[in-house]
Amino acid sequence: MTDRTAEPYVVDEGPASHRRKAHHAWRQAETVKRLSDRLIGIGPFGIGLDGVLAWVPGVGLAYGLGAGGLLLYHAVKARASAVTLARMAAYLAADNLSDTVPMLGWAVDTLFPGHLMAAKALQKDIEAKHGLPDEIDAKTRKEKRVRKGRR
Image (cartoon, rainbow, N blue to C red; front, side, top):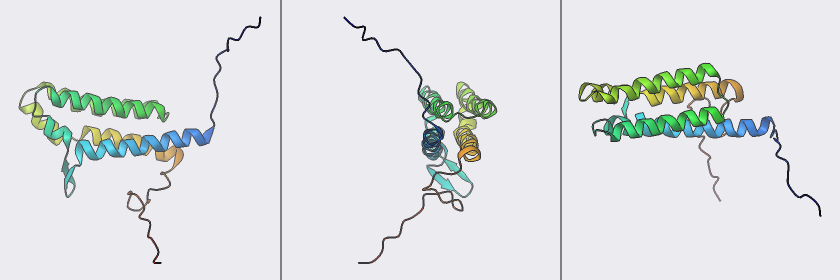
């Protein structure tokens, strides 16, 4: 009888896989940034779910921790630098700690774009290592529009 146990081993997926994971993290950060702090934009200012939910006791903190945890998860998957992770954690801590103080803290949370700042830090780290994702226009920093030709 033969032993059919498989030995665990680590497969290095290579630079292309790291780049793909990093660009996925960049896009996820963009989504969290838009939902949390830029759902409604007025010039350079905006408000999102984080600011609206801050006024509902417990719910705002739960959302803030969840969205922040998701950003940090993607940062680790993208192999962000320790400095970037620390910066992100500081922004998210400031944002979520303000939720613990009723009224004044909620007002601060509404105006402080912690998720936006953490997401931008992650995106900047990814861009420095891997560049922008292919579908993002470097000038507008939005998805490229593909023009369809006439038939």
